[in-house]
Amino acid sequence: MQKPTLAVIIPCFNEELCIKSTVVTLLRFLDLLVSAEKIKKDSYLYLVDDGSSDRTWEIIENLHKNDSRVKAVKFIRNFGNQKALIAGLDGVRDIGCDCAVSIDADLQQDENAIEKFVEEYVKGADIVCGIRNNRETDSFLKKLTALMFYKTMNLLGAKIPVNHSDYRLVSKKAIDIMKLYPEKYLFLRGFFNELGLKTSYINFDVKPRLAGKSKFNFMSLTALALNGITSYSVVPLRFVAVLGFLMALFGFLIGLETVIEKVFWHNSPNGWATAIILLCIFGGIQLFCLGLIGEYVGQVFREVKARPRYIKDIELR
Ligand code: UDP
Ligand code: MG
Image 1 (cartoon, protein in one colour):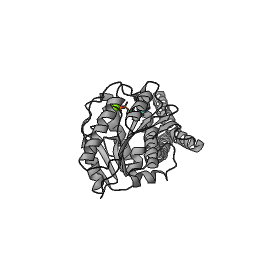
Image 2 (spheres, protein in one colour; image 1 turned 45 degrees about the horizontal axis):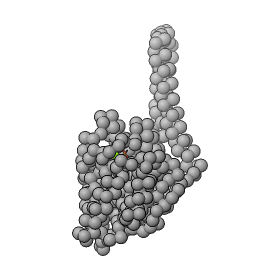
Image 3 (cartoon, rainbow, N blue to C red; image 1 turned 30 degrees about the vertical axis):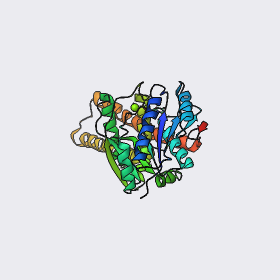
Image 4 (cartoon, protein in one colour; image 1 turned 135 degrees about the horizontal axis):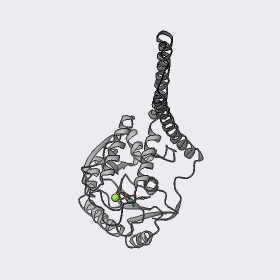
């Protein structure tokens, strides 16, 4: 295969401390790949400013003035990292490229892996997933919840590779297919995995953040995980139905046992405690199931409104 035109997508939200050095590093890296004849000269960076309230956009404008390979788009407000990535993929589809890599603005993901990504692409892969070697930079809580998330997703049938963040290469073919998916809350990790295109995996090291703080907190990660689950699996809904059936069966058997005891041994059922405990357990299970169904109703509600995924303010090409 011919050497490709590579687009590197970088979502940025309040990254004034990192963005300049990230862009300089990545441009230098593009130069390196060009001189090694791995990619074409017209390869470029595509920055998506996810409604930053700091100097991020100002810095991006300056970088664009100095080097036309720095292209960018700015949202009118914060839409979240997934939307920024989607906008990045839409943007590079419009501008044109053979393949695109998405990488975080804090360069936590080792950028040198991009070379291996491109090699896999040239060998014929349409999707190359970066798999992190370690989670040393993560807190205990993040490690635990991440593990729970990947296990749950795999249990539910959405086979997402463990420890794959949104660091990946996708071919033009995959980006074009994305256009066929109108769903607003597209979960990219699930989507690219589900396509069934030829996929490779490359391991990479995770570094500490260049500067600044993580833009994710426990709540936003939970929201991402719930969206991942409810947009890729209805198994939890079936689970609720089975659970309801088992509970009813249990109640029926206990009732039967009580009647038999009363008729044959004249034993009256006793135990207030038992009644209260069962009441609480079943009440709890019912509320949990209602909440779970509510998540799906919420997903339907958001999709049905069909609001735009993101709104662009300014684009620099
Ligand atoms: N990000 C974004 N919108 C948001 C939150 C984060 O575009 O609402 C970007 C952020 O600028 C960074 C990437 O998503 O480039 C990953 O964020 P971060 O490094 O804060 O997450 P972590 O590495 O801690 O998971
Ligand atoms: Mg980070």
